Image 1: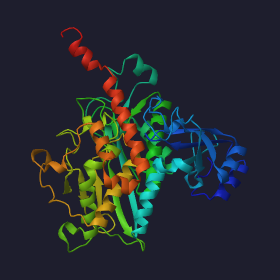
Image 2: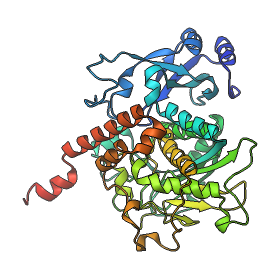
Image 3: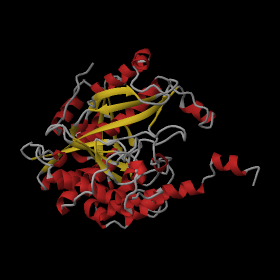
Image 4: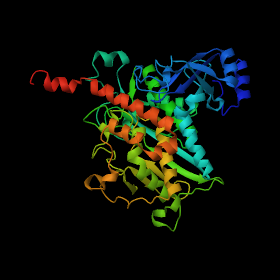
Length: 456
């Protein structure tokens, strides 16, 4: 197999493209929903695009996950004529696609005026803020996802009902399941290694056909790239085997939702971890306290950036391994923020409100940006939760919005969000979520038909 290219420069990518190492090239960028939009590109076009970028119809920033055109955006729409948006190629993101013979994938970012609403550009701006404050961030994502013995055709024929899970029953951390179905697990492990998004762990979770993958820790922007690519290529790998994987926040009312937890730590510019202080309570340094305080204070205001689908809110219910308010605790999995100790190298905060349906760039920007805001304003967190957070009551200001529409309105009016992320991004992203809520409100669900069709 072709040796994996690592952190290429512009010149190195051009040289690689001119060589015979690869015969096909794919380029793409992640849209506002975290969906990878892209195309094959010729060798000559790739070479010219490395220096000057390339044009991409800006409809990819003006439609939803169903390719339906949004009617409430300022940036693009029929009123602009859907011109091309400039895309900047990122040679450092280049990696081979193992199951496509001699094919190289290169990610891009939306540039020009679109940079203000580009999800990856958003995270870069938050990381620049961290750098200005003297910090760098390292992050790790972990995703739960259900696998089904279905195809895109079969699930539609069934109306998404009576789906056949890849494995039966609830068998968390099963050595039996991972050994009996070793081919899929090894394919995922190998794919992630070859595409420079190595897994730190892969195991079965509690539920029929559910797996959890923990990606290795990396610098924050690289971690988000890996997380977004993992979600895309885990689904591709499943479909290539006649299976389907879903990263919905919750696909069944009878099973827990699917988490997408984010682990974050900070270091100073000398590389020294700044969250750990041995003599402090819970060994949390002031910087870590303020970071957690900021995350807690802004969680409800920014929830739309993390719980960004209508379905996201079905997961945030008591007793299902998901938080219901902006709480924190030490090694407490009933809280929204879990402080994990263990010394300078491992002291971190786990952002547990996130589900598997996140756009990793946007969710990490919210989790990291709110923590940096807390450091800047020296926000002290509340007392940590001890015991079961579901059985306790908390101040109203810690309560979450109860719907996507309510969360979008909170984001729109958040002064902190505008200051952290820029008004263009906040306005654009909130508008896309309001659109999503509108689409849901207009739908007639199977639950409504079953409940009302005959009786009412």
